[in-house]
Length: 92
Image (cartoon, rainbow, N blue to C red; front, side, top):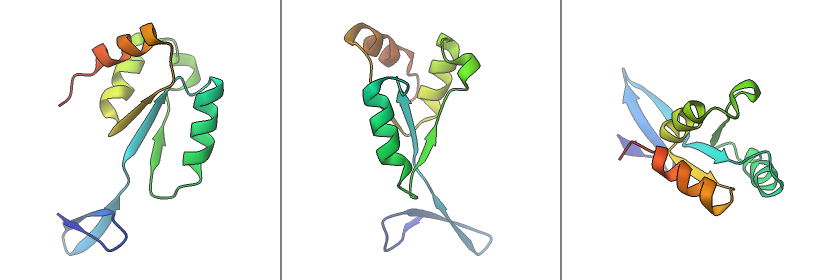
């Protein structure tokens, strides 16, 4: 594993380098603040924004899945919902 000049993390695999984009999950992305943050981050080519499919948006299991798949989670939620989201995170 090495770091390129642009700050991206690169993995050496069979002589090829592949830049890995950090996965960003915005919990509450459909609210006003979440929409604004998503719009700002969408302009960045060095990030991958992951989103729950619309039909699964209200499922706690889906939120847990995406929270744990993300490298960074941004919580645009009321305090109680944010605490619930944090309790769903299982990875280190």
